[in-house]
Image 1 (spheres, rainbow, N blue to C red):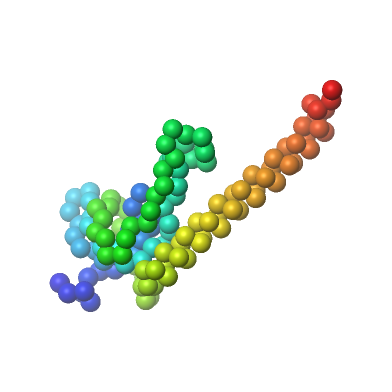
Image 2: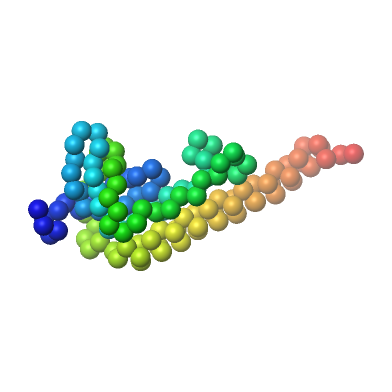
Length: 128
């Protein structure tokens, strides 16, 4: 099967999402060659999301260009997005999107803390 005939797919691997070539699919696993990054993997402890003070805060790199990953077959679906973006461009965009998402969460958390502080005062819990 040459490159033009390989099926393009979207595949999830751990917390990242990739565009790639489906190399094989046997049982519960599929082999996918990475061509682009759709969603950068999340950082930290997946069992304790949004927690910074954990025993091991994991740094997760995106899979490399043309890296072959064994992914859950259930996470593979056909890619119907037209041209596959260049790997470096897709990595840059997915990284920027993840940073922007986290900054949004941070801004939300800061604003929530401000509002909760005002409510604490309003409830009368700050009276000496």
